[in-house]
Amino acid sequence: MEHIIEKYQDLPMYLSANNGVVNFYPKFGFERTFEKLPVCEFEIKNDIKPVKLQYDDPKVWNYIHKRVNFSHKLDCLNTASINIFHLYWGYLKDSIYEIPELDTLIIAEQKESTLKLIGVYLLRNINFTQLAKFLPFSNVTKVEFGFMPYWSDIEYVMQEYETDPIFIRGINCDLGEFKFPELSIT
Picture 1 (cartoon, rainbow, N blue to C red):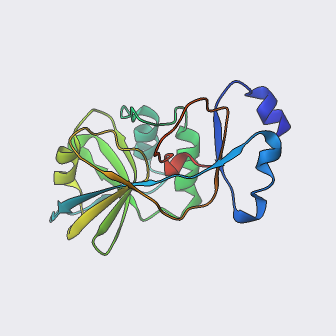
Picture 2: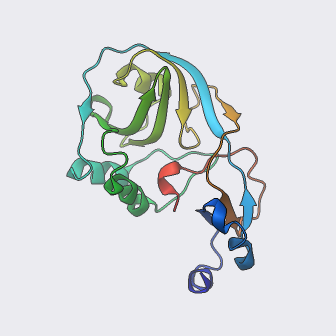
Picture 3: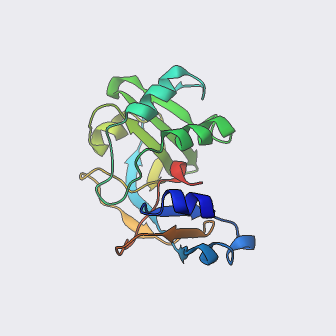
């Protein structure tokens, strides 16, 4: 920890922890903070055959490294390696979809009528309404985002939810209600 803090002392940092170590990170200047989950009511009733990709498909690497969509509220730069790590870890191996018509890769899971968009990687800017028309899901009434949405054509609310403890260091502003991108958390 000391080596990383010294090497990157002027950069804001955040990390995820488990409840067993909540007293460890404050020793290094980290403060515990609490995220909220962006959620919107949105109906999706598409009858589209999904185009699934394997985590090791070169297209996945290309989408993640060349994405153009970044949130104006809160996002993380230079996170391609940790994004790839999450996909190679395997727990999302059945959640990787390509939408070739939109030059888009999504990491998503549907549970009952809720669609969780864990990650969206666009090679060109589109709005959410355009994306929704091509999502290979049906019977969706609610969308949860694993990041701060970057689209101006949807309204969402920030809801409290249970997650692992989050710690921040070197952030010199009020984050307000926020969600760190799930695929960038270490």
